[in-house]
Image (tube, rainbow over all chains, first blue to last red; front, side, top):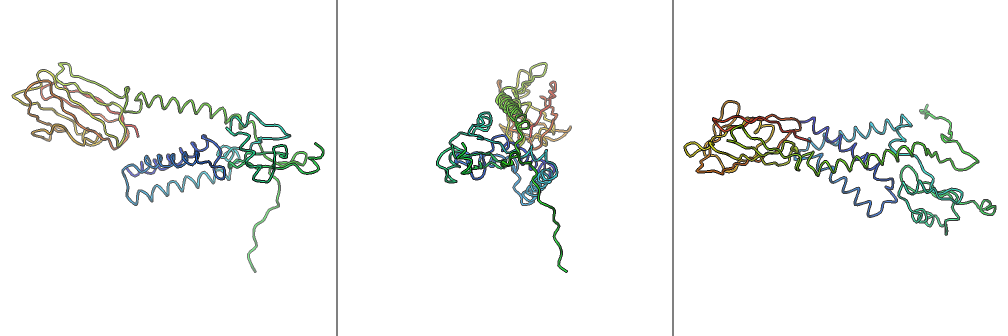
Length: 155
Length: 179
């Protein structure tokens, strides 16, 4: 039934959005090989249920249109309502500030100090005490704000 | 005259405190989200347990057995089945099922259409249409005797079916097909 094709596509997309949101916030630049496996595997498994045994071109087109519409809908809601954007993306989270780790955030986000140090090294910072603030952004990257020279001298 | 772009002044949506970088962290929301995450992981775990037990088909909870009052026919099937996934319905014939070297069994149309009967084993000697279903005739010598129908339901939902050995009591039941 045509309605099931649309329903399956919408459910697959929304379910995957929820899963990716729940599984963790480390996509993009910080994607490790371990996380690559997760993303591709989730995508592949969702595809099996979405397509089923209906492999016609019109089925593919309908499902692509459904996913596109769902994506447009989510993007519109995200743009229109801050609360929805927060729900969909989360908020930035401070990992390190005033030379102290935010241990609650680190443990809930399953992020280790080594992950922060990786990003610090990328910016040419030799040690953690050169960091003013480390932030886990909503899109998954860790932003490092280095201590300014005069600030460093004060401390 | 060239078209003018629409503009608005640049303002920080997140206020800066002590001239520090404006992060826009919302720990209250985040703590609620972490609670939600814990609850949903538990929920996922329950779903997996339910799945292993067969609450969504293909497990212990999904199996069903029904007999008519005289035990002429005992039916083993999955009362929870999955769409587009094979499941087997087994007809176990009891005393009085064999008449003149034949077993005649009636199955309602719903077993063929929504429940997607794919094949029947062994092949019946005769198939006759009528009375809202099909009557299969099998050559049979002595008990025990079983017939299997492989089902592959196409659509989710609750599907009623009726089967009976001709001359015996009917067995009526439903199969719930999950997507």
